[in-house]
Amino acid sequence: MTASATAPVVTGLGITAPTGIGAEAHWASVLAGKPGIGRITRFDPEGYPVRHAGQVPGFDAQDSVPSRLISQTDHWTHLALAAGEAALADSGVDLDAVPEYEMAVVTSSSSGGTEFGQNEMTALYRNDPSWVGAYQSIAWFYAATTGQLSIRHKMRGPCGVLACEQAGGLDAIGQARRLTRKGARLVLTGGTDASLCPYGLTAQLSTGLLSTVDDPGRAYVPFDAEASGHLPGEGGAILVLESAEAAAERGATGYGRVLGYAAGFDPAPGSGRPRALRRTAEAALRDAGLAPADIDVVYADAAGLPADDRDEADALTAVFGPYGVPVTAPKTLTGRLYGGGAPLDVATALLGLRDGVIPATTGTREPAPGLRIDLVLGEPRQAELRHALVLSRGHGGFTSALVLGR
Image 1 (spheres, rainbow, N blue to C red):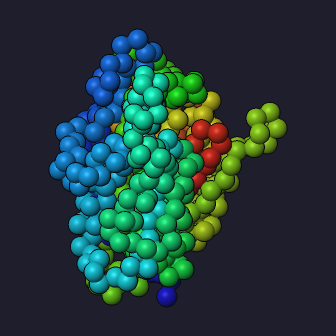
Image 2: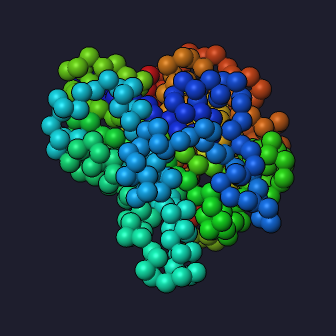
C-alpha cells in the first residue's frame, strides 16, 4: 500500500470567514475575487491608524451555538463552534458510531478570547471585582475552543491547542495527522481567531506589521511593489480529518489527503543564518515522499511586507526554480486571520484540488521587481492539480508547511 493511500483524509469542511459562511459560499467568493474586507463595525475604529479588516458577514451565533455557550464564550469560539457543526455535517460521519476515546480535537489560536477579556477587564476597572463574570477564567483561554468542541461532540481522545500565530493552523493539522497515526479515527482540527476589538487591534498594531494604507483594496497586496503590511481579519476553518482506515470503512472519499507536514523556526535576527521557510518546505516534501516537480500549486504565506515577501519568493525559487510553480494568495480577500488563516488556506486548496482551479491573488497588480515567481493574478487558472503546498509563517519566527494530495 502506498504512503498516500494510508494518509488521513479530510472528509468535512466548515468555514466561517469574511468571504462567506460555508465552504461553497467561501469558494464562490474566492473564484469571483470578491473581497470580504471593509470598515470595522464591531467597534468604532475612528482614531485608529487601521480602520479596515475582514469580518464574517451575517454571522449570528444564535443560529448555531447553544444560548448558554454564547454568554460563556468569546466570538472566536462562536465562529469555531459554528464551523465545527458545519464540518461534521459535511463529512456525513455518524459520531455515535465512533468510540468517544478515538475522537480528538486540535485547534489553533493566536490570541484567545480578546473581546470577552476586554469586556470583563473594563467591568473590573470601572467597578470592582464583583462585576467580573466567572467565565472570564476560561473564555479568554487559548484552549477554550478546543475544550468546547470536545465537550459538545463528546470527543474524549487527545485534545490540544497550538498557539503559533499564523503558522499554528498548519501545526494543528499536523498534530491531528499525528494523532490518526496513534489510534484516533477522527480529529476535529483547524482554527479560528477573532481579535477585532480595541484591545485586540492595539495589540496587533504593536507588531508594526499592519498596513496603514486607507484604501482597503491596496492595503494588503503581497508581493506587490507597494506592499506595506497586512490587514487583520476574523474567522477561519474547521476540518474533519479521518484516518485512512476509518474513512475507507464508511466509504468516505473526502476532499483530499494530508500527505506531508513540517515545522521550523527562524534563527535569531542578525545571526546570518537563512530563515526557515525553504528548509521547512523541503522537509514537508520529503515527509510526503514527493519531489518539487510533483507540486502543482503553492498557497503562499504572503506576509505583505517587502522583506518577508522577498524571502518567500527566494525560498520558492530555490525549491522550484524561477517561475517553477503557480503561486497564489487568496487571503488578500480576507486579511490575515492568524490562527484561522492557514486552516482557511488548506480548505481553499482542497476545494481547488477538487475542481482543478487555482484562485487568483486579488489586489496585487504586478510582482515587485526581482521576485521570480509565477504569481496567479487577474483570473483563476484552470489546471490539472494533484498536489498543493500550503505555507504559513507566524510573528516571531514560526514557520510551517503542509502538503495536500487530491
